[in-house]
Length: 115
Image 1 (cartoon, rainbow, N blue to C red):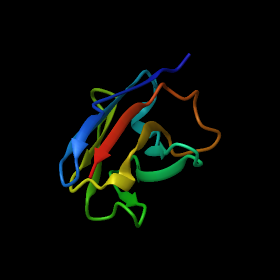
Image 2 (image 1 turned 30 degrees about the horizontal axis):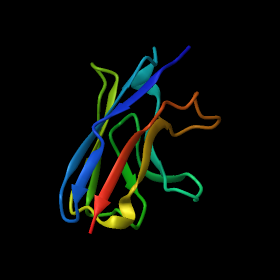
Image 3 (image 1 turned 135 degrees about the horizontal axis):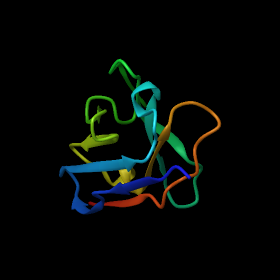
Image 4 (image 1 turned 60 degrees about the vertical axis):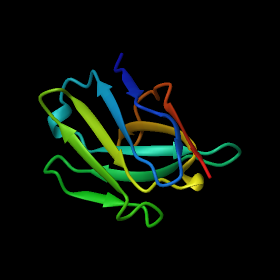
């Protein structure tokens, strides 16, 4: 079964930065568009950023200019660099493929931004 393992979350003050990592066991990772999602307490999971197999990226308006998604195909890993963090970025962050249906979700990594 494919595994998605997110890491890098933590507690940070507003304005700070974090870098999230998602290690995958996807065998054909190089041809899979990937994405980061987040779910705040009491809210639905939302798409934060995505990256195509060719490296093109797209972002939710709320994070545009602050977050950067990247991928390392040799490591089958996706990253999310988060700068200028805001309290409203507080959520559990997950990675998954951009296609539907999603792969089984990992445990996610908690990001908490204090004001």
